[in-house]
Image (tube, rainbow, N blue to C red; front, side, top):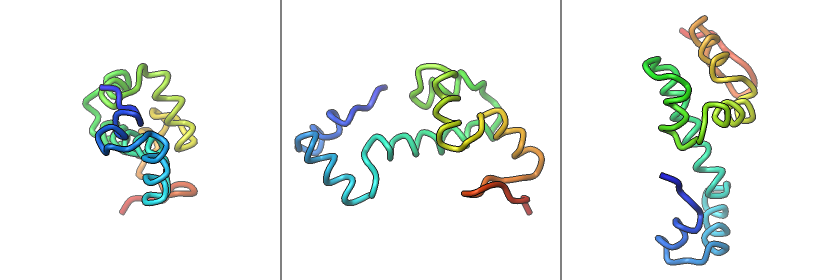
Length: 103
């Protein structure tokens, strides 16, 4: 389901503003930045597992469509999900500033 900062703040018994401020102070990211990073890591794992379509992965990871997932993935990793998968299959793995060979 959809996760909002307001929902998280209510669970923590804080205002949304205070929750966001405390969260960012402790983790260095806003709650949404943190959630998006978790979603993207899950997307990568599901892509590499190879048993689901990009549309299925998008819906499972909380994206409304494959197009929105692809745009978010490109923004985060500077490549499309399909290009990421193709590059990984060629024996390369992602590194912060490029690709390196797998062992």
